[in-house]
Structures are given as C-alpha cells and as structure tokens.
Image (cartoon, rainbow, N blue to C red; front, side):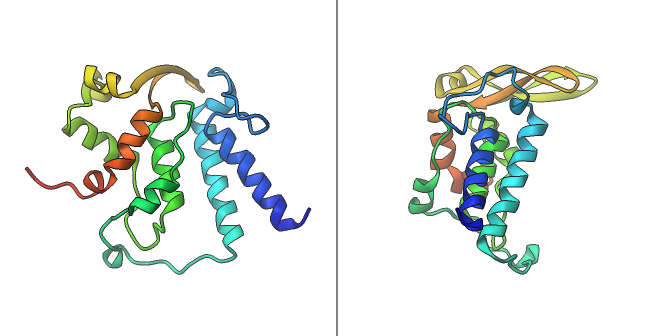
Length: 185
C-alpha cells in the first residue's frame, strides 16, 4: 500500500468515526461511546480536514474575507453530500458541506447559520435554559422533519444534542443557498 493510499484509508476511518459509524462495517457506534463525544467528534473532523489538505498536496493561498464570493452550491455539489444514516448535529452537516466546497473562495457554512435559519422557518425555536441563556430546540414541525434531541455524554456530564436524520440533512442541503444568503423579510 502506497503512502497516498494509507492517507486515503486513514481519512476514511476518521470520517466514519467522526460521523459515529464503525469504519470497518458502517454500523452506528453506541451513543455512550467516547467517539460520540462532541469534542472528540470535532477533533476527528479537524484531523480529517488536515488529511484532506495533505492529500490535495498543497495549501491554497488565503483569500481575504472581502474577496470571498457570495455563497452558492450547485445541484451537482449537493449530490456529493451523502447523508449520514446515523443522526448528526448541525456541526457535522456544516463540516461535510465545507469539505465538498472550496471554502477558501467563499464563506464557510456554519452550524449557527443553519440553526438560525431553521428558527426563522419555524422548524426550531429558542428555549430559555437559565441565567438569560437559551438553546435552540426542534418544534413539532422540526421533529416531523427529522430534527430531534438526544442525550449525549461529555466531559461535564450529560447534555441534550440536537441531531438531524437523513431526511432533515437532505432538507438542509436542498435549502443551503437560502440558508447562507437570507433575504430580509
């Protein structure tokens, strides 16, 4: 196996783990597994991105924020997004989209932009939790769409995590241009 093939293989394993899947057989990893910890998952997504850049063979020069193009995703690029069979958080969706697109030349997709738009269209709402803090949770329409909350375990104990099933992921991808380029109503 060449060095390049080993890097591709390693990236595949890391991508699978980051998405909560066993890289050997594609089955979902149990929720309580450390790999499903949000900090570990984000770290794995970061390492995957480093490997992608290594496989590309170069680091493109930085483009200033003012020179970045307005966000746009083509239908062909949307087809490159393969929804995770295991529900994933909005950060996982944004990571996978940014992996497809050349975010060096346009604005990156952020999970906050996705969830803010979902509030705007009534699929999520803000819920007060304490001390003036709030979190976004799915509405009844959002739950029907495939946006749910599951309890995960992190370094500070259990916490609710909003996740998106295949249908909800596809809905987000289908609406990315509207999400990233909102019009003021």
